[in-house]
Amino acid sequence: MYSPEDDRKIQEKIKKILEGLPGYTASGEADRKFIRRLYELSEEKRPEFKPIGPMYRRAAAGAALIVLFAAFNYLFVPQYACVMNVKGTVKMCRAGTNEWFFVKNTRTVLHKNDILKTFSDGKADIVFPKRYELRLASDSEIKLAHSAPKISGQGARYDLAKGKVYAYYDKLRNSEREFKIQTVEVEISVLGTDFMVASIPALNKTWVGVLDGVVRVTALNPDDLTALRGQSVQVAPGEKTSVKLGSAPARPQRLMEEELLEMEELYRIGTKPQVALLISTGKGRTRELLSVAHLYISADRRGALSDQIRKINEQFGKALKEGSRIEYLNNIRQFEEIVDKHPDPKYDVQFLLFIGAYYKHLEEYDKAIAVFQRIADNYSRSSLASIAQCAIGIIYEEKLHNTEKARIAFRKVISNYPNSPEVDEAVSGLRRLSPENITK
Image 1 (spheres, rainbow, N blue to C red):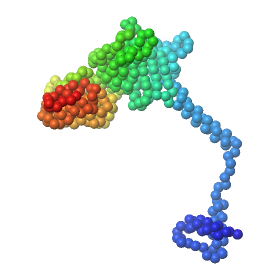
Image 2 (spheres, one colour):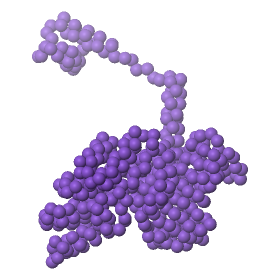
Image 3 (spheres, rainbow, N blue to C red):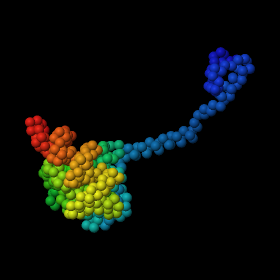
Image 4 (cartoon, rainbow, N blue to C red):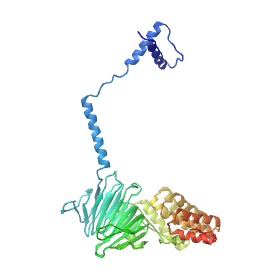
């Protein structure tokens, strides 16, 4: 027999089954039997629990081990770079041996402490997908000194014994990971960039040039290769430095055009266009920009977009000679279209600075300010953003004679970019506008 409590549970069950009949209650013994039978049938449809047999348990355990092994390899086992695009004579020496062998096939794995050497007719790329790409020039030798597991933030370090290496490091994908190249004279710490290192043992000298991003160059103690305290400089885009053994790095200077041409080899690794705004690195660089600086562009001929960029840049030179305002504006619009349709954070700032300078040259001051403001708003972390902010202040002061907006722009240079070369220009502007109330 069912107890009253069983009847109550049956009623609740049937109410759920018969939701379309609100307030339904069973009456009479026949109805109650019918309801009980419905309840029993619903219970009978429940799947019976069956314990997992030994075979299934072994399969589940095996799958779990496979997943664990894959996760362990992904996180803890060092990841390896590959030697690719080998041309000419290239040799490798495996770690722990003195045996050299020719590298002919592509995708040869480079392990920790392996040494790669190119001869006078040789070159090779070292590629770690989504992290970095290196091109070893002829007569060069490099060793993979350190390669960390993926879970580690230490990254990789290469020791360049001699010759030249062109490097691209994807900082956006590896924001927490270090990447270093070391020679006898220096350690180069990468902060996300395209750069070149040349080791010249005969002169006990290392040369470093940067195309994009920033690198920190630290002089090393010649006895134990530890960093010399305080003996380091940061090299910004378009700059170079050199270091002699046991000496501090030279003050960064602007790359010469022939050096830029040589560094074009870097861009043969991929299809990235090379862009460099030819202005100095000192406090006068904003004035140089507004005097219409030249834009150095070298691109891989295989890309349609690269050809388009090169063509537009050549048209600017033609417009400059002819003084054609229509040609200028047409070229500017084409450059703006490239930035809008094919954005690339590595080059957009330089393109936009170039565009803003030409708008100012054409006395389109409002448009120039709008372009420079776009840089300040959207690319505030760029090492060139301070130029845009300072240019806004100069145009407001000298062209639009808007004293209040000029003050605001110069103060933003000082507050937002306190270590930039533009601070001196901004302070000078504020002194001109408010000589009685200046604080740096």
